[in-house]
Image (cartoon, rainbow, N blue to C red; front, side, top):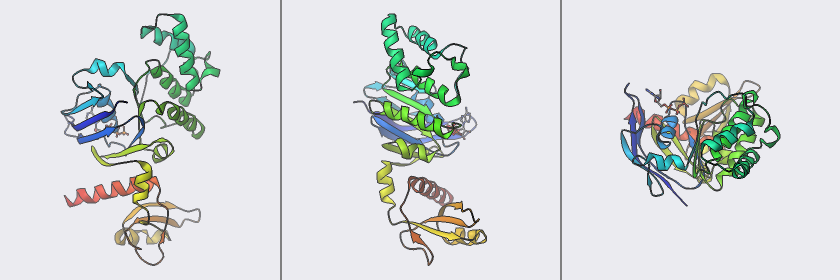
Length: 298
Ligand SMILES: Nc1ncnc2c1ncn2[C@@H]1O[C@H](COP(=O)(O)OP(=O)(O)OP(=O)(O)O)[C@@H](O)[C@H]1O
């Protein structure tokens, strides 16, 4: 099985924004979640791995392919679903997939039918294979995007923020499709939605300001916070005091307009706090908070 290796990858845009700052990571086959807020550098990293843009420095390899030196070799085994993709003609999914398979050089109609049927089935589009892709809903279009990239039998699949804008049922269907294909491939899912990673990924990293903050299995990252996440219900007027006094990592409103705050602390911060089971969102917010503190001290 192949490993994707990135070593000291950096990219600064011409306007001075450092989108990737010395990123090194190893990614094994399975579902990998790349989590980060807007502007963290996720798309830049995805496009760099997909050979769509050059880093200023760094090494990238997939198995024995040197990605920067042999872009074509990488492209042959890559399936990339960008954040935004084009407008489709008014052709049925089945016809379009046949067309794409033909473009990829699958000459025999029988062979084409086989891979098209497989792609439609795994993405749950068999029932709507005769419908025009132009008329598909957002979620169906996303699944069609996956069907299309599966025609290549890719080893490395990159999906950039695929669930943004999908309704909950469509999102669920889309994640199930990724789960099915994740067992045999390296699938990198870039997202700012913690639940996407929680539901799906066996490995993950958090990117912020171009830096990798945390690379752990989600279960290990959660385990590391056991006994360190504290909850308190407060009145909203008391928020400022608590933010100043304690390491508040997140907050949310209750129906009665009180607030639940979550605090990261090795010990009970004060009376009124209860220790609670950590969640992946705590891992995410703790990492971002520590980075913020680190940057303000630097
Ligand atoms: N072509 C470009 N020229 C200049 N700056 C850019 C360019 N592309 C991205 N950036 C900047 O680089 C940083 C990282 O952007 P990137 O799109 O990689 O982040 P992201 O994590 O994918 O965010 P989003 O979720 O908003 O797409 C941002 O500050 C962005 O404004």
